[in-house]
Image 1 (cartoon, rainbow, N blue to C red):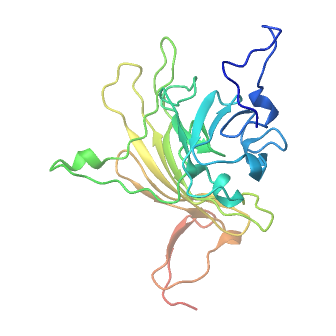
Image 2 (image 1 turned 30 degrees about the horizontal axis):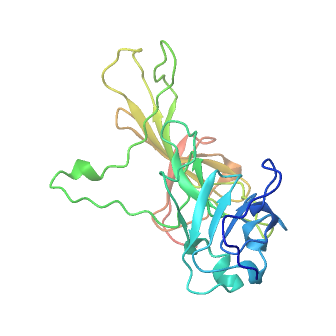
Length: 247
């Protein structure tokens, strides 16, 4: 490699001496994103990788430094081995109450939290400090919670062999009821326990705002399987039934 006694200059001041987008500079480069073939950071040839590499991603407008122990491909593509340089590293945008998540190593605003587990810890003597609250608020002038509005819902999903969400989701739904208008101080509400059976989904139990417990309604063609202590209401016969044995 030649040794230059002074700064290297181009005879055309408007032309580049080095182009970091050409992927031929060891230690620093500019990439479209992480995963795109040829132009993505993951596609950089092993000869060009180095510890401490500085990579700018034009798609996410963020610069990362490589902190991995080796430059093997597995370490290179591991997003945990890249640290954001400068600023907050946060993307612009995001709506009120959006959360910041990582997708393929890029920080992205999303309206929901996707997590495998959620634990709410209370480090206070006040039990209310560990509440999970669903807040239903419409925007705009004169907007308010109305009778029948869903205040919040806890729902579970299943998947078929193709990865599609199955129909019929067990749920707990919190519903506004008996609204007295936009300036009503106290919110009446009911709780509905939703269950699903064979090709049918319905409310299995409801607790109303005035403390009535309403059990599921079934017709003669919807009689549930017998179970000792089972209890249901038959709308065809207008009667309640209790199971006396399990068969």
